[in-house]
Length: 87
Image 1 (cartoon, one colour):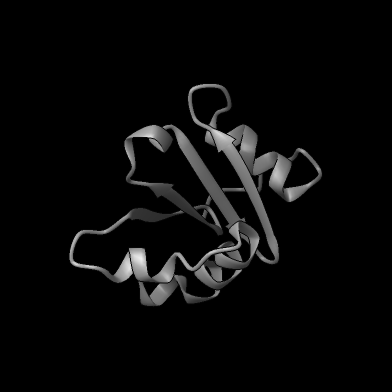
Image 2: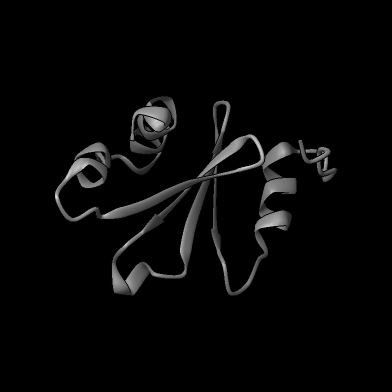
């Protein structure tokens, strides 16, 4: 959770609720991981199991993984449609 502090703060503001408590609990309410230079958050709730949130800089991009690939969502998040080189 420590590496996602800024992203959790931004996502919490964007959603209008604090997700930090869900991430730090005994049973996490969210899965978080890195994709390129963005953070990806996925709720561990059955009714939202396909919904994900990409957070990069000051921007959040919500997407449904069965409809949009993570690459497509990332390109939209970056704004120019171009994918950066993978490090």
